[in-house]
Image (cartoon, rainbow, N blue to C red; front, side):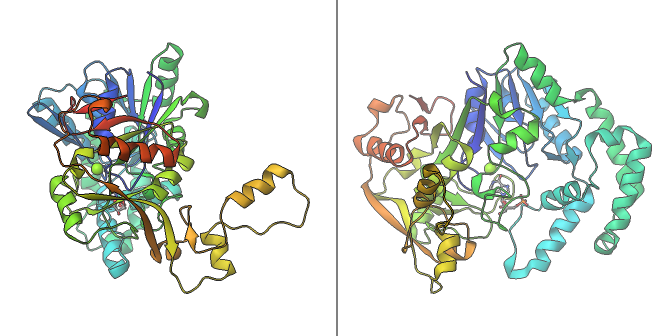
Length: 456
Ligand code: IMP
Ligand code: MG
């Protein structure tokens, strides 16, 4: 077991929960580094289905420390509900630890999330309504309230009052009462008190003694605040770099980055999605794959696997291996398409668009070392074929995916236990992904259960 970051390579919902649960067996600590209750991880163990939003799926193994990292935004009421639900099913939450510098989601963040979405009208992001964006706004504005603050009533009161006044214009009709929020948060805080600590220090001390850590991401690369399809993103860094800032772990301690990708693509919420299928194949994938949101119940948009996106994820996250999820869902589709490039159909193909969309950089007149000149040549060509994920959302919207067609397979693969026993067409599909990305597919999931997992 290596210290491993689990990162979503697409738009979230790739199956990080299942892989975290699977790998947790050999880890000592499982730590979430970002996001909040916008995440929804479904883990199936025997007859029990666990839906987790805040707590890492490692909690389902006894004896593992599970951490809610400082990069997270936490709604204490929801956290306590989730803990109670687990306890009811016989899962102990005594090994949970909560970073003292994680930020709190308070009732007014949800109110503001809703109001802002309404104001956005047709340009709405399609947030999960959990107050994520507004809580991170407060963090960046340096007025957020951290877990540690709640244990000092004077500090908590002062910060809460400041926020209430600050947001008064937006929340004045919400019926929220400051004193009520204050007393309930103090009550919740009393319960989590024994679990709160400096989780970065805890991880460091444990690592020094040889403990192995899984750093569990939420959402996916294309929902990352900086590298996703902005503004249709979440408000945190869901990419691998977020593991360092969200947990206080130095980069050189990360030994493996496991990229989780479905065998196709899904997205919830609005924003461009080049390989989206609005036909019966898309509907079939949605039905067979049960592609409905864990947090909101919304139906997920479905489409072919987009390798331009996956290659981009490899670059941004430094992915060292893939877990390919839900391969079984593609069974029965006669021909499968793998997107390997985009064609840009936009009218505004001028030099400027080319530079930002195709990454074509003008060669500097100044003398440069050879490696820099080569890098600039490699980062794009001045033509209509786009091989790299474009930075401009406008260009992405005007791209048509170019596919390589592959044969599908018709027989059930959900009981297959090894790569060599997979049907040849399924093996070819996997090999095509590896050839294109130059990254090995190390795990293949052929069903929701723990034992429906092929490890190579
Ligand atoms: P927010 O994170 O609630 O602000 O939502 C911002 C965008 O991220 C919306 O498109 C959501 O649908 C999407 N999103 C947030 N969390 C998840 C997730 O765990 N899975 C998939 N999409 C998510
Ligand atoms: Mg999810």
